Length: 309
Picture 1 (cartoon, rainbow, N blue to C red):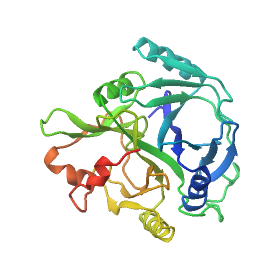
Picture 2: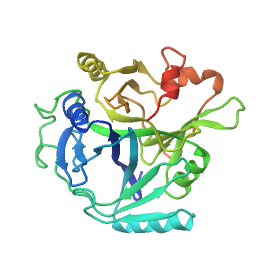
Picture 3: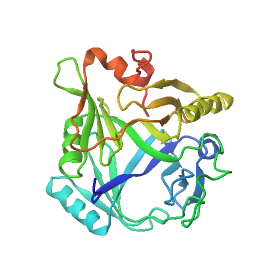
């Protein structure tokens, strides 16, 4: 698959209720690498195996949740083209100058009908992952502080009008629908999983009356054993676990969900499958939605459905 447009998820900005508490959690319990702080009070992190300067930002606020979620695009020409395409589709875009975020180039920001701010960018400083670009070792001995995910992988967002969101992601940004859950009427989607690459999803949306809500931000681990290790670390640190360890029917990933100290849900997962744009979309019907979300229990956790930030 030639990747010439939107490449992958790039960064997320989260609101936390207590900045120092948030720094301690994301740095020491989750095990991200702190890469900088700016004059706006934002603290920057990346996962150990990521090469760009940042993938997670946190800032202190009166309410938890997500400020924006961003995708990396192939180059500056692609950024300009997608900006024009979004405007032609009827969306208002905003150009955010290079340097507004540390080590990050110009960004294009727009709001989708679910009430979420999405960003695109083409340039961000490569600070490496601690390994040489010539004859590297396969892993870094001191990388596993805390849970130590290898990357920020995707997010699940809650809001209205997800069919309109899907249209923007497919027609303008070049994503494709990998899986969806259909409601009782057999026609209306409850949830959609979208990809711009060969992984099962880069972003997902669930239909919800309140706009702009975060269900979870997800971090990738390399094995089921590391998901279990993550559960141990969460328990050791008295982190509030939502559900798991278990497996999804949707995307097949093995997973555990928990909450940061501010109430933002996060996921640590591994597995899933490779997919391609020519594959048929997988459909989950309402009568099997429990197995689609939690394959082992085959039933839904009410808190998992209703608690968002």
